[in-house]
Length: 233
Image (cartoon, rainbow, N blue to C red):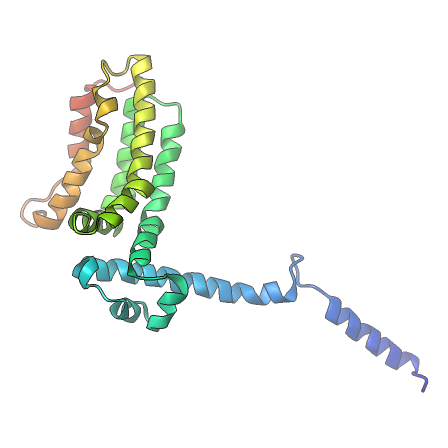
């Protein structure tokens, strides 16, 4: 049976439509999967936010995944699509909340700036990105839960603290070579620089309603003790 030109043209156009790809060069399947991927990421982030609220309210041991799911507005089984168990959920919570802050601090540490300038930039990052946000709850959880759950403390040390301490020691060595500090005491004990931040986290949870603490001013005072009051030119 012979087809006329209209029929042949119609079939040709149908084949063209089937072969046509969406804008951007991706396949139809990948284009349709993007909303699902975005929805999955949003659901995962909601679970992590809910986990922080639940762990902060109940502690690691007493927190239940059922309650995390309820806070996040998902079925409990959805949590297991993203996290193997409660411990892995807590560990990913540390990465999710603290990883971006660590990355920002590492960028500051890599800059060729005077020690006091870098310390003050790090202070502002701490106040803006940790102390003034829900991220401070992660530090409180590590302080309170770490002694009972050393695996969590070890994970936090490896993923967060060791990276920060390594960066601080590197800039302190450079500062010693430039004559900005007189000895290697701070290189051996870089914890002295960040100690007021930890004090502020503890204080804000216990005593801030009785005597509010100006964490920025306190950390500046610590820098004056450590580096002197002279500002870099």
